[in-house]
Image 1 (cartoon, rainbow, N blue to C red):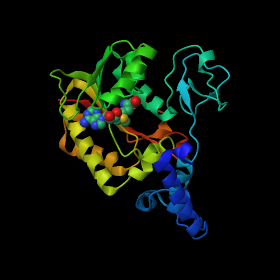
Image 2: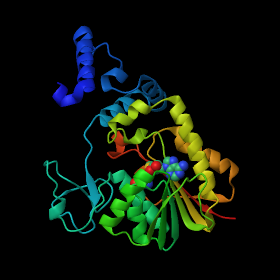
Image 3: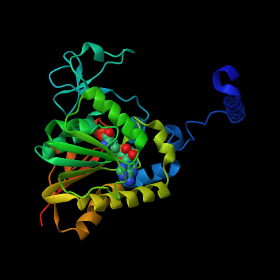
Image 4: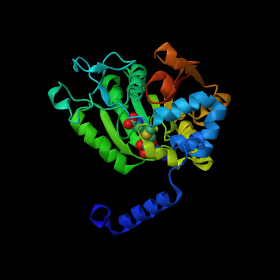
Length: 310
Ligand SMILES: C[S@@+](CC[C@H](N)C(=O)[O-])C[C@H]1O[C@@H](n2cnc3c(N)ncnc32)[C@H](O)[C@@H]1O
């Protein structure tokens, strides 16, 4: 045991085994849905109130599944399974070894939902100077760099920006510039044709890809995220040039982080008008992209855009 887990790890494993031996496994018939699907009880109560019991159970089943791995492959990827929404998205087979070497071109592996939002943002960014707040490790930069004149990719985490730099070198993004900085106090004195806030969030839309993230959930965590997101939106909006775009996205399913932020922003900002995002109609409500994983078959994301009109 010590060889496998080290001295302290072995002790922990023994303690867990003793507890399991003493209490046995939970009886599936008397277990609550949260126990059955291994999700926090208060989050399941919240989802049940918001989505209803059937959609909540479908969501938890989805979260416990194995995520696909894929990428937008341009003209490449012949013979690979297609995605559900983007014409050039391809899903890699689960063979245990990577077929990437045999494919033609550098790829950014990401869920189709992230690729879809990246593509949609790239459509708005065509011919513009762009600022990305919350940019690392570069999933959206990868798409923005294809159409924007320039992209300043800012993130407050130096470690995550190291990963952005690795992707930058590997994929050869042109016109993209890294910046480590706090988006609530951006160290910039210029304006941009588009500012994207790819906001830090509770991640409730991507639990399938990040199974540990569900155990971070709490009402306080949600509240902290909504405050930070509001600050990021406010500082981002000050950097949008007249006629420019402001885009806000999260990988959360929570109303407070998505439509709630939109409501608060629009109530006090008549200098920004909502612009409908160009995405498949099934994924768009009131111009904003909203993805519910078990129904749309990809990660849960939200995105909305405004144009500065003053
Ligand atoms: C959703 S992730 C970004 C994902 C990235 N856009 C992509 O597509 O690969 C949110 C990012 O926000 C960053 N972040 C958190 N607080 C921030 C702040 N105050 N200013 C700037 N970035 C922040 C996190 O480090 C994290 O990388």
